[in-house]
Length: 393
Image 1 (cartoon, rainbow, N blue to C red):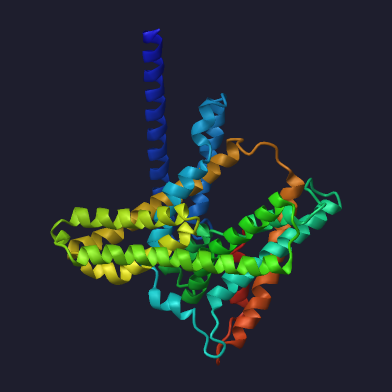
Image 2: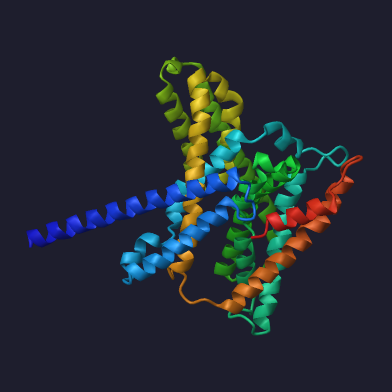
């Protein structure tokens, strides 16, 4: 019996070592592909697309070599792995390296004192949720898809869920300095993707409460929704700012500059702590981590030693790069690993159409509103079309 357990343990160890080696080799292939794409300016295939393509090839090969469902478990996309290991480095590096002046300039209007980013992130997400939700609801009423059509709440839950966007692929293209793209467009897309997370969370949780209590969505509920959104947004931003300032205070009032390795480790722990703290408090960890990155870059970087300033920037960028490739690899492998169960192709097709329609209802009217707030400048039609395409779900 002991020999059998020992043999099983050794087999599991070898299987884990083989999978680790496989992922290391695949990541190396992705980095080489990304280098070749940038070096030869082959922008018809973005880095994210290349990583997904590699992942799909690996998924097909895995299905051939590992016919057992149990052996395919290592290809399953794990949401805990994504939210607590892969996503934080991407968001933090984006906040740490963002052009802060350009980003916050988009929170100013000359006349209306509104915010371009807030306009797209708040009102745009609400519009997207209700357009997708009610189109899905009426598709269910017509019998096109299998969904509870007695009440729009289930469809609105789907609308809120899919209205939360994370355009990692788009940002990886827009942020490429060699393409010389409009920096305003990058700021708008990134700002919307970060801030719309809080709106989508509030909308989803609110609709879920109504669904569970079998209540109707009234005007009073809408007011409650806005209050909850405001609290989540302010709480998330405050959490990130507090954590970033706490790290800056500690670095400034200690002699940790003499230990660069400790400095960088401390930055990493405080950043990850802001994300975890926000999630524990049921706030938006993405928002908290993003603003923590901004605060650390603005205040804390000047308190670091010169070697740590350079090293931290490159380490965070490397972590984000590896995480992005992992995400796209897993997405590609997941497509070919058969982990999604039964496919409803009608629902998939209609959902794509609904997302496109909702985005058109979102960007064109809101861009017109945004243009009224600027003196002597406006979004050209081409920029609005790019904005529409870049934030498709």
